[in-house]
Amino acid sequence: MRTWFLESNGVPQKGNEANLTLGGIDLNNSGSVSIKADKKLLTVQFPNVRDGRVLTLKAETTEDLYEWKTALENVLAHAPSAANAMGQSGIFRSYQADSLDIYLDQLKDKETVNYVVLGRPILLALEEVDGTPSFLEKALRFIEEHGAKVEGILRQAADVEDVENRVREYEQGKVEFSEGEDAHVVADCVKVS
Image (cartoon, rainbow, N blue to C red; front, side):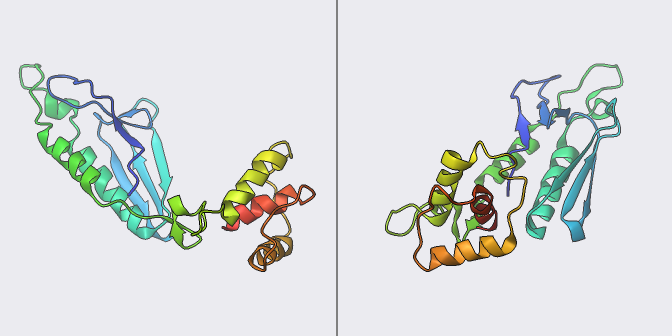
């Protein structure tokens, strides 16, 4: 599960309240989480924010989508709000942030998902078993050296057949990229890797 979008600035606010932000949105407001499972989209709405901010995230897998939904719902459920934090006298109550801290610690302790590239863990995708640079690493180096100044290097698509031919050539032994190769083809090889 990726939780990079959720951060705490660590500064206690109003007693023991944690000041959590999500993309610059103060989570000390009420929010709602909804999903479109068929498109793997998760939407977080903050109606109490001045601009009525909406944040949409696209998950890679349905499993990620539901993990994110659960995590965000738990954070929002435990986030202090003015209604929860204010006592009858108008003085802020001491909010029990312990349960939120415990939940966030549990998320950190969860086993991380191993994302794969070319059927291998992402950290190993740049090296072959023998330690030599992989196809992905070589293609990235080529783009860095020869394609960085090419207009639309990652935006403009190359001919699909050319990309498939180049991947096939690599698999058949042409393991180095030459200076004269089309940078768009090599960039698309990275996209399909």
